[in-house]
Length: 239
Image (cartoon, rainbow, N blue to C red; front, side, top):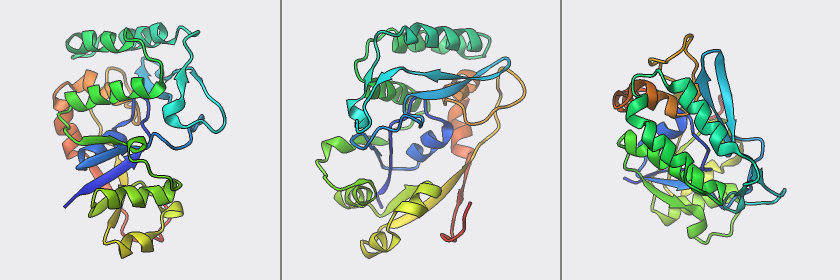
C-alpha cells in the first residue's frame, strides 16, 4: 500500500504537518501552486516567556507568484532577528545546547528562495525526529492541472492507495467520486495536539516543531508517534 500526502512547504511547520509526513510513504511539497501571503508559508510561532511570537520571513512576491518563485527580501535583516529570538527564548530548555550549532547553521546559510529555507528547516525536523518519508516537489512532475485536480493526478502518478487530507479544504475542494473511481481512499484527519514539556507555562499548542525538539530532544519522536489523529468518517460532518 502506498500512502501519500500533499501540502505547501510551510515555514517552521507545526506538529500536525510533521505528523502527516510521518504517516506517509511519499510526501509531496506543493511548490508550483499560488503563494498564499496570508498563510504560514513564510511565518510561524515560537514560545516566549510571555506567550508566543511570530517569526516572519520578508519576501518579494506578486499576486500570481508560485511558491517556488518567491524570493527572500535580502534588504531586511530578518535572519539575525530570528536567530536571536530563538536563542533567547529557548536558551534554558533542556536540549538547547545539543541543537544550538544546527540552528545557527540554518540561519547563517544564505538563501535566495523561500522554499530553500523552508526545505532546510523541514529536513532538520525530519532528521531529528527520525522520519524517513520520501519528499517529492510537485514542480518536478510537470502536471498542468489546477490544485484539486492536480492532487488526484499526483496520487495516480505514484499509484497511491490512500491520500491523507486535512478536513476543511479537502471536503470543500476534492472530488471524492473521482478518487473512489481510481481506487484511492481519502482519509480525512484532524490532528489532536499532544501536551509535552515546555520551557514556559502555560502550555501553548500549534507552535513550530522546533519547540518540541528543543524541549524534549529525542523523546520528541516518541511523543509524535503517540500523538493521535481523529479520522473523520462522516464526510458530511462539518468540524
